[in-house]
Image 1: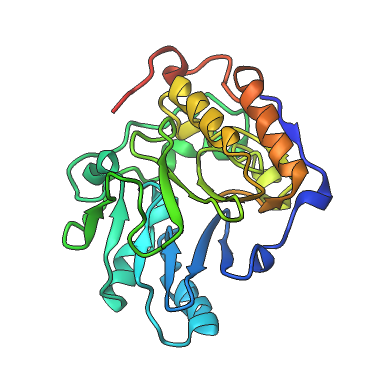
Image 2 (image 1 turned 180 degrees about the vertical axis):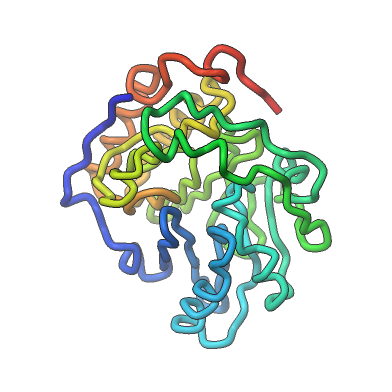
Length: 273
């Protein structure tokens, strides 16, 4: 697959995204803390075994104050791995899209990955990645249907399916900040080398777990139409400025050329819902 190149000047460090957004990279995935002045919210929880690292990072910035809530962009293993352990320490609500709830309440496992797409080691290893559902049914709640994010005034969630059926992204209109989840990436997530070096490139969602490419394209088009000025991805470096906005518009316009794999199980036979 091709990519949309990003100038280095558009890339910002995880700890300087915005005054009220902090990021932490855990191996190959990012988590984010969004501050509201009176509290803070955690977006995603990274990999199994990273709860202690996330808690130490949170204490550095918020002392012993637990988050007001945890928002899940989706429930893949690299976004919910530490969730169970964190909830053992933090008694807080967890919010997800209604179509993602079966994967967070132990009801349903994700479709198997497709290692044939992507052409990199991360893709080839994907059959080894966990895909069983977690069960946090005592904590997880459905996001409000009107788009509000209960713990984050001024933000709204946007349904961005394709990578998963209930995938969401978060958007703040005041400064056009977009928390992407896995709707697209700013690194080639299929490649171990690209993940290790964090070379700035704009790519579609991680291909080995994406099950509906038409929906994925529509989701990128929806996000590009917002013209975000600050892009905060789960995989890769944050981006800002006109270069980021233009790169996302180009990805949306050329999605089938640069993001959709030429072949693959879910390219020919998408799974919806």
